[in-house]
Length: 233
Image (cartoon, rainbow, N blue to C red; front, side, top):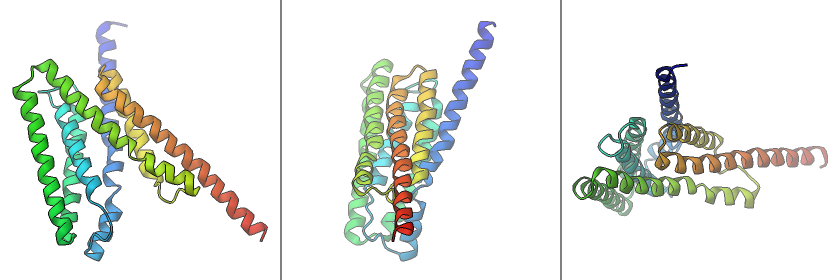
């Protein structure tokens, strides 16, 4: 097999994993919809927090910038998925601000402005003060830190599941989407030889697998407890 054919196959596989990662990410981006349906229906944010969406927006913007050709040539599919994610987060934040009480509204507006200021500083520093190699390393480390923090956030839910022996607060499809997206971008990062992509997504893949394993275990345990109550009143 000629090197040209091998290169073509390699490029096709790389693109397939990147596109798959973009598609699986929709599961994550769409997961807050039930929450915002409730907010719109009740015309109130109730006790919901807007912080996760602000943080998700910052994460998407940093990773979007890392995937841009000016920073990392050849991984545009990282930029596309995060540009879509940023739009979703902006929509969620706008709805939250619309229905939040005055104190929350002002806090969310302040946080939103802070996110754009911080992102502008990152872009300015990376473009004006760093050469192309240092620029990729600088933004790459920021994206890794941001992604690992995002993937680590379900650890609180995992702890709750173990304590309560219930999967009520760990949505199955959200965990599945996290695993599939992480796996796809882990493979994409490996194809592109980019540790700033495959390292955090490898961690996300492990955490997603852990969540699904816990879901299977505690779902089974819950069914057994229910059966015991039914047949041994």
